[in-house]
Amino acid sequence: MKTKISTLIIPVLFVGLLTGCAATSADKVTITEQDAGKTITLKTGDTLIVSLEGNMTTGFSWIPATQTPVLLEQVGEVAVTPVSNAIGAPGKILLQFKATEKGQTNLHLDYKRSWEQGVAPAKTFDVTVVVK
Image (cartoon, rainbow, N blue to C red; front, side):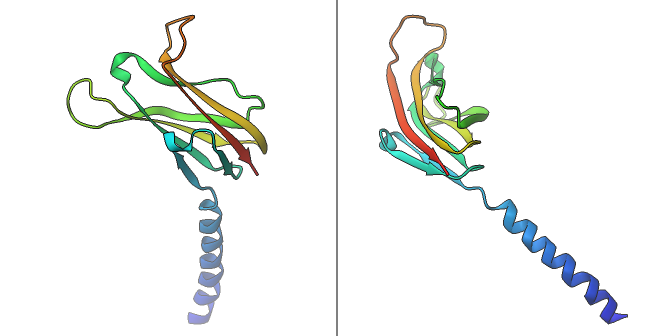
């Protein structure tokens, strides 16, 4: 009886280990203002987290431009981590993108108010993204 149980448990544990390895193959890469102008390399399935200074209480937010080609898909909601609990405090604005296709693209973000038309952005952020 002990031999039969171990014969069943060992293959199940082995499959569980393989599944665990596959689930952790995607990475999360975080970039900030210091990475502007750089080339960022990702693997398909990786998540790119862009953390930039901002203050959404003023109506400004980081808005991604259309990519050509489209290799990154924005996922989740924009998150804000204020520097303090004070009303109107600035902080970090976090955007997440999932690498969906192989290739190279420019990720361009404008810091602006979405309702203002014909107004230049207050700031811009650009990186080249290579997905392998």
